[in-house]
Image (tube, rainbow, N blue to C red; front, top):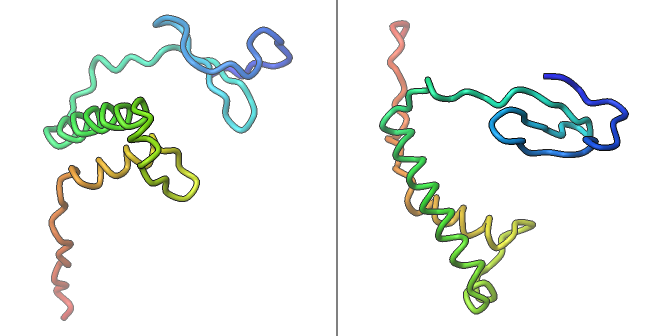
Amino acid sequence: MGQVKDNIATKSISGRLGKDLVSKVISGKTFQSKYPDRSQVKYTKEQLKIKMIFREAAKFASYIVNDPAKKAAYKKKNKYTVYHAALADYMALHRPKKPPYQRKKSPHY
């Protein structure tokens, strides 16, 4: 990843340019890199389930934000925006429950 120095045109720009270039601002410094190739990534069933839940959570949060009455009625949490609070609430309600942690028995006891 290359760092951009003293370039007025690309300083503090973040995002992608097509499927070729990605610009990131990290700690106030602008970096550019090749667009990541994620075509070989294989997701587990659990990861696919979480991705689907997150997609639905984003739709729910957008729905709340785009309806002025619902947005006004929704409670913000701390410093989070209504969108992020709605996203977190949806995820908390729909995320699969993890089984309780079970401690392995030590052979020393």
